[in-house]
Amino acid sequence: MKKKELLYVTILLLSSSIVFNSCSKDNDKNLVNVIEEEEKQPIEISWQTKAAMPSARYCGDAVVCNEKIYHIGGRSVSSIQKSNFEYDPATDTWVSKQGLPTNRFKLSTAVIDDKIYIIGGSVDGIMSSRVDVYYPETDTWEDSTAAMELPKPILFAGVVTINNTIFVSGGCDSKWNAYSSNYQGIIE
Image (tube, rainbow, N blue to C red; front, top):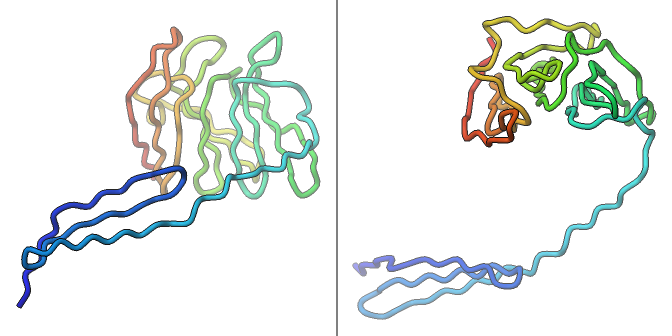
């Protein structure tokens, strides 16, 4: 029976090609395999102008729920907003929906079970740990409760969902000090 020992494996990325090298020892004979992957093609995106939002906003957040896009909160040129705009890509139209319970921007959003979660942000200019829930089907809000709030106020956090869990990572405070925190919120 021949005994083989793996000595090393190296992966190199060279000019958009991936080269795999491996060596093994087989009765004092070196064996080298090289597999080269085809060069990757550059990604191209064709942008199209679509219907503009009902009014200009920045520092809000957008999320997809039930095939519609929601742009929630944000700031206009003059003030923090409660805005909640729904965009239907099928008809290229925007509709104003029930606004947030509070003026809010620098927030993050997530979707679980056809509900939109509004996480952290700045409420009337003060950092917040609020988590409000929007029900698109009924165009209603559930206000944040102590049981729903984040452990600390947070702005501009990265938010993703996996199954019935929201993960909130990073973000910053009102002086732009970055956070390394990572929170898990399980929806029950």
